[in-house]
Image (cartoon, rainbow, N blue to C red; front, top):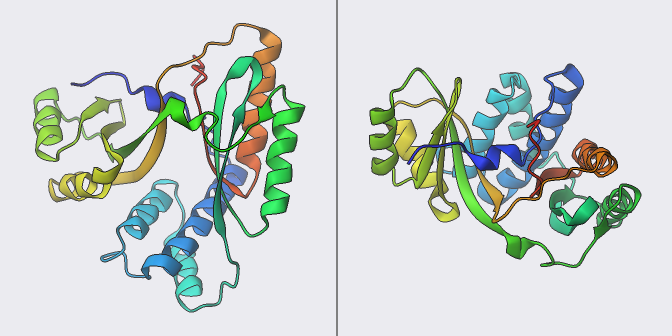
Length: 243
């Protein structure tokens, strides 16, 4: 049941610089704001908010910052009205790309995303043009405190997860998207430290790029997408050995 978790290769890993941390919290803070407006400020009754708080802490966001966002959103001080829009397209050599955004200006965001695709060897397509190549999965990431394979396998089955993958510092449990929160709660009850719990888009097949120019353009496309404050997640089917 265990094995290498392919999904972890489709989200680029960034250096933990101060600037990168600040940008990560901007994105998490925006998602928390929407989540609070939809489900309330109490993490005990708002499962998604609970997961976002865990994600923020795993990214070393100070508690004061987290509490400030919750207070501002729950008190109605945050007047921004964010909407969720998903863009789809192709990168160099037909790499499939899904871009999830939260924006208060869809014209700006659509223009930015289209510009990145055009500039770096791709093209933005219509809704549904690549999403059929992906499957939604729930991923719960926990701290790895030296758990042995037998425990992980037993807990995976008992938590109703589909699979798991153990690395040096973390363990990733995979579930259906609908079971994400139930699996997360079951693992927390077993004493695991939850680092994140989120729905991800896992591609059915992967594309390997060998042309240096295509690799360069694909890297630039992903970098510019991820640096945009409106972009929450970028999913793709490029199998990059560097990540």
